[in-house]
Image (cartoon, helix red, strand yellow):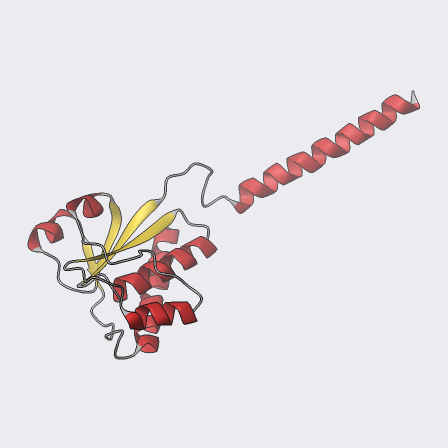
Length: 168
């Protein structure tokens, strides 16, 4: 009889421990249910090499810290060959890496699949009409002052994340 009671007690403890872990996992992952598709935010700058790269890197870092199911990509209207040296060095010093290995041109497909498009430059008229575009025109040139440009971008990104999080 004592063995049955002991086995029952052990099984009860294992079940309680397991259920506690499941409940904790569900509450910790509440904002991002398992299997929930990521929603894409597109950051666009002229060359796809600096401002959009920094914005996407910080957006992904901060969205991850908030456990949100958003992912940012960086695009350019006229992409240059390489990511800006000042952006690459600045991100590296900040402990981040660029979301893209080299600048990528903006396409209609990027726009159609986006939850939000944020532009640091003018977009071609046909792209601008297909989805609402938020413009962040107050950001300094990254090569001029990486720190100030980054700080302005990060403040914008935080406000965007607050807005997206409040809609959940």
